[in-house]
Length: 238
Ligand code: APR
Image (cartoon, rainbow, N blue to C red):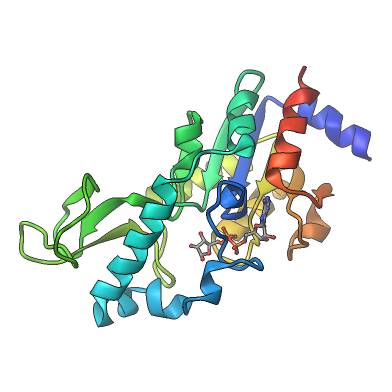
């Protein structure tokens, strides 16, 4: 079984990675639901929903500013870097739920940010969008149109940008191997991507120290961290 999965990886023409907070955990960024999870100290429904934002935009901005500071001081880890190195041997597309930008900072060339980005902002009314260039003096910051700006991230209850989600489905449905690394797979629709892959006969591999709801559907589940595992996948090609 293990040998056949290794052969599938070696023969793959396209590998899709579905990643979550766990892949950045070894860069010092806490996960949401793991034992050191972020949500332990904050009530998700207080900070990551559009109604919470309108109830208290200042609190939500303060939380995202704190997370942004933590992310800016983090560095891509050996897991992120191994995914970049895989690109030397095979087509790699990263579908990430993370908003920390560490895949791009590591050098991954094809990354879809399913839940947006912590460095991007948009207006709550007009179509203004931009990267955050400096810390705002006043929070919540205002757009030139006079309305408040918000982090350009997908909150609970919001749908993913249609064009991003459609592309993600296409990649998930057209890969030889899907590696699901560092995600609890509890948030939809990202957690349906392995189903699209399976329906199209891809080999499914999970990298997670803990079991997930999809573990029994995987061709191979590796109970280890992404830093300990992903560099091993690169050595398969050497
Ligand atoms: N390597 C690999 N996996 C790890 C590591 C590690 N070093 N450390 C923790 N994990 C695993 C945990 O066991 C857990 O299953 O990573 C997973 C992280 O799960 P979550 O914290 O639920 O994060 P994620 O799946 O990305 O959450 C999805 O929920 O909160 C929203 O929008 C937010 O994008 C996020 C979405």
